[in-house]
Image 1 (tube, rainbow, N blue to C red):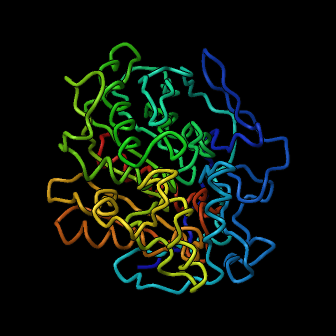
Image 2 (cartoon, rainbow, N blue to C red):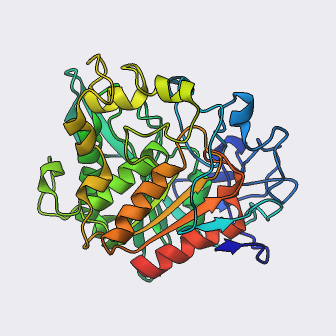
Amino acid sequence: MRLGRVPALVCAALAITLTGACSSTSSGIAASKATASPSAGDSCTDTGSNQPPAAPPAAASQGQPSAGASGSSVGPGGLAQMMKGFGKTVKPIDDSTSTVLDTKGQRLVTCETSSVKVTTKKDVTFSTVTTRYGDKQHLKLDLLIPQGSGDKPLVVYIPGGGFHTPMKGGGATGVQTYLAQQGYAVASIVYRGLEDGIYSDAVVDAKSAIRFLRAHASEYGYDAANVAVWGQSAGGWLAAMVGTTNGVKKFDEGANLDQSSDVQAVVDEYGLSDLTKVAADFDEAAQKEHQTATITEAQFVNGKNSGKTIADDPAAAKAANPITYIDSKDPAFMLAQGSVDNIVSPSQTLLLHTALRKAGVSSNRYVIEGEGHGAAGFNTVLYVTKMVGFLNKHIGK
C-alpha cells in the first residue's frame, strides 16, 4: 500500500534539541518559534517540507552513512563502530506486506507556541547497577508529564547509540514533547551498552525502568496501566526485545519486582532484530565487516573483549533476537524504516514484522521511501500522525 500527501498539521514544539527551538523548565515546557537555522532533517525547518537532501538519499551509493537527524541518537563511539560496516549499496526488498510512505515534499511538523504545559522531571534514578567491569552505575530517566486532568498513558522512549553509549533523550526530544502535548506521559531512559555490559543487561535495565515507572505512577501523576515502548535504532531493537519478552522472568532483576514489566504496544523505528544478518541487504564488503569480532553487535552480544564474531556463538545470537521470544500474546507492533537505510538493513524490521504476523500478532510496518537511517521522513506530518494514531489505538488516548 502506498500513501501520499495529507493536509499539513502544525505540531506544537516538535523540535530536535540541537536547534534550541523548544525550551523546558522545571515548571513546564513552552515552545517558541524556531529562530536558529536547523540542521538537515530536523523537525523545525524554514522550508516547511521534507525536501530531498543535497546528496542523494541513498547515500550508501556514494560510500557515506545515511544517518539522519530524526533521533537515531548514535553516540560518537557507536557511530564510529557502525560506520565500519555501513553499506555502499542497499538492495531492494519485498515491501508487499508493508505500507510505503512517500514523504518527499511533505510538511514537517513545526515549532509553534503551545498552550499545553508539560512538567519535567530530570535525572530520576530508576536503578543502580554494577557493570560487568565492576563499576557502580546510576541509571536515570527524564519525565515529561502533561498538566491537567484525565488519564495520561505512558510512553517509554529508548534511545539508540549503536549498542555503544546510549544518550538519554537521544535526538528525539522534540517528538517526546509533542507526544506529551497529546496527553501522554513520556519517559526517556538509558541502559547499559557494550561499554558496561551485554545485550541481556540492556533488557534488564529497560524492564527495571518500566517497573519503576509503574511503582511511582501516582507520585508523578500518570496512568501506568497501559505502557508503550518506543525505540530508535539500537533502541528499536531493545523496544522489540521488551515487547516480545513480556512475561519472561529471567530479564526481571532488581527492585520493584511486585510491578509488571509487560508493555501493551511497541514502536520500533529502524531497529535491528536478527543480529547475524544486520548487513544482509548490503554489499559484500559490508557483510564481511559485520562478521568480524570488532563490529558493534558482536561485542554487544558476546562481550567487549570476547574476540568472538556474531557467528561464533549461535545460542547467544539467538537469545539476543526478539524473534526468538515471539508468541501470540505479544503486544501490537508498529515498525518503520527507510528504504535505503545503509546502517541497519531494511530487511531487519521486515524479518520481525513477518514473524509477528505469522504468530498472529498485530504488526504494521511503514517504509519511508528513499530515506536512510533516522532521516527527515520520520519527522513529517504523514509519518508522525501514523505513530500517534497507533498509540491512541493501543494504549488509550
